[in-house]
Length: 295
Image (cartoon, rainbow, N blue to C red; front, side, top):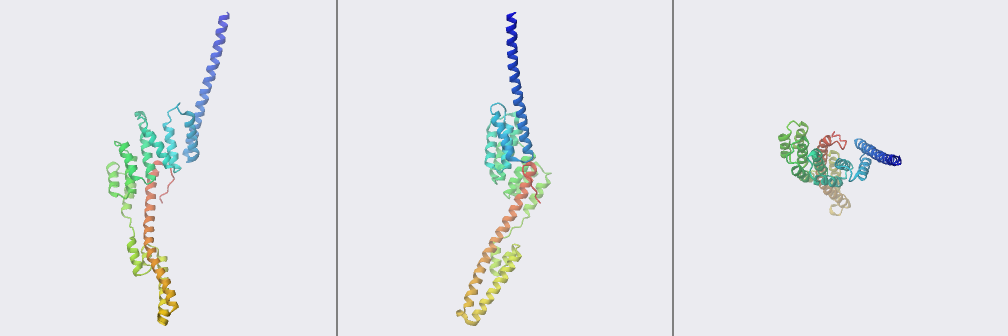
């Protein structure tokens, strides 16, 4: 009887311990599900700073226990959303350098795309293209062809950009329209802007579509030159008015020529900024990290 009693006590003891362990495991599992779900919800709301912190905590609590590749993917995407591109690149490179798992091919492709996207946002287009061609040479997806085309577009290589789209994705009218717009961009020549203003003050700025500045330069230099002429006419080289207004006129004239050259450069730079923004918006439609309105 005593033997059965001891056996019963041992059974109760073991059962209570197992029950406690199971309860802890279930609690831990529930906590993980909640933490991961909360982090994903923050990410979906584009609250990348808090989402990154929650995913990072999830990694800390589960390192060595779970496969965390998908969580690292989220950390990389959050880093891109926070414009911490170097951190995103480091995470994505580590994912790509890890042993290849054919069952996780989709995540690997995603890592390639986001790595290329991160480099694109840093305007490291050559590196972005290299990643696409070396890490997924057989991939013919819409995302890859779009990334290749838009990288070439940012490099202003319209021919290769069009080839990338027509060979893999000929029905992508939005990118083809963007290429067509890029080929029609009309830049202003800094040399011509300076030359025009050297011949007739202000016309270089009018050429760069800064009409008010151009007319102001023309009228100001014209008035000062006229006052200098009147002073010279009255007293020739002994005229104070001639030297004073002549010096001002010469300074404004030189500034007007230089300003016209810079005006053309700024005009071209703004064209590039606007066009690059439209290119980026096209990729944002795919990766959905940033809210981007190309209009």
